Every structure is written in structure tokens, then in C-alpha cells.
Image (cartoon, rainbow, N blue to C red):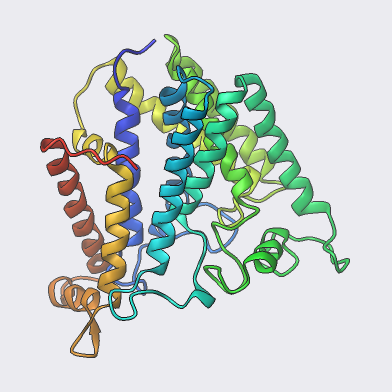
Length: 362
């Protein structure tokens, strides 16, 4: 049993946040290297791994944060407050405007988003963890993944149309989002952080909880590798019937991304926690204020996109075109440099916060 923080988990959390910032902050969306973009629909790119990695790490954190907690009103209150804070911060990001009237039109306001999903997934996963042992959690996860596949793949829609996994009106995830959320979605036809797809996202977090339990074992590395292989093999086989898809958070997507997260964690765990190698502490510092840094990066980025300079350029475009665009650089590389600069800034902020012992818990 560990008496200190697991270095590999802090490292992976911070690295994930840094990668979130990188893929969310290109110089221009018209010039982005393909690995830094999400798959158009079915499929998997490196970028598609980032958000499930974060939810997976949330699960690990739940295990260690609540493994000695009492199943009490006080614990439930803390979980509820934190979940509401996360949801509220995400809703604020969607609502805020950096100019009068300072708030978006409510009629088209997007209700969900990354922070909202983290809040919902954290709440449900933490409650499940407090009430069920690992065997029940594993069973619940399996039940959700199989039920999600059967529902999306075989249950006809109310109008009798056969269901589809494609980006189409007869995709149950899209249909439910459009019915419930209407104009309050990311796109007119679907939302990658929508209602129904939150269910398999909870499984990603549950798998993180189960991996947290493995990390509490003195033979952790052996079990981590075994779990990673099991996730990956089952996920890629499941892909035959239920395509890997981040937009609807398909069951195969859950398994494959959990497999890669476990495998990468096992590699870092071996180097940092077993061999004691010292590297990448800067990401550890970011990980210790992960939500704060992610929120600030999203808030500042949105503000820069909306503030106009001279009536023609946004502040974002002005900085990008003035500093990063040059004839001797390709458009993709210039765009990447902008994103890397943003990452460098927020990683530096994480370092400063750590040195000044500023830890903001959300």
C-alpha cells in the first residue's frame, strides 16, 4: 500500500492537460497536422485519446481519494459540491462573452462540454465506488458497454427507422441529444459530450477506479500490462461490430482508450515509481492544478478569439499572424508553434503555482 503520491499518475495527469491545451489551441484551424485533429467520425487519432485519458485518471484519483472515506452525508456533500463546481465552470465558459452583454444568447447556449462531462462522470463514478466493491463495478461497467451497443445497434427509433452508428438522424445518441437539447448542442446534429454518450464515459472512469486498485498492489506492473492487453484486444475485436468512435463514445472506444491509458501508465509507472527515474516533473506541477489550468486556458483562448482589434482581426489572429506566420515556415508548422507556445505558457504557470504552493481544488 502506498504512503506517498504515485508519481506516474501525477505525471500522466499533467501531460494530458498539456496535450488538451495543445490540440485546443492551434494558430489556425485551417492548418493543423492530422494527428492533432479528432477523427472525422469513426476511427482513432492520438487526439481522440486525450479526453478519455483524463476521465480515466479521474477514476484513479477517485480510488485513492475515497478508499478510506465513510459512506456518509459529509462525503456525498463534498462529491456533490465538487461536481456542481465542475459543471458550473463548464457552463460559464459556454455562457461568458468578453464584451457587453457579457453573456451568450440562452436560446442557443450549449449546455454540455468537457468540464460538464467531467463533473457528471465524477459524481456518478464516485457514488458507485462508495457503494459497490470492485466486482460489482466491473459488472456495472460491462453491463453499460453491452447495453449501449445493443441499444444503439438494434433498437428501432420511434418512427420505425433502423438504427445506425453513422453521423445520421437515426443514430440514437444523436437522436436523443437533438430531442432533449435541441439548439443547445455543439453541432446542429450532435454533441460529443451529449446525454446518452455520458453513460459509456462513466465506464472509462470506472476502469480508472479499477486500475487504481491495481496500483495499490505490490505486483502492480504485471497486472497493469495484463489489463492493458485485455482492454486493447477486446476493444479492437469489438470494433468489428461497434466501430471505435469518440463522438458517440462507443463501447469499443472505451475499451481501446482504456487499454492505451493503462499501457502508457504502466510504462511511466515502471520508470518513475519502480526505477525511481526523475523526469517530467514539470508535468507533475501542471497535474496538481489540472482543472484550474485547463479552465484558464479555455477562458483565455475564448476571450482572445472574441476580442477584436481594429475591427478586422481578433486578438488571437493578430498575435498568430504577427508573431508566428512567416514565409519560410509551413502553415501547419506555424500553427503548431502557436499551440506549443500556449502549452509552454500554461506549463510555466503550473510551475509558478507549485513553487508558490498555490493549489486550487475544484
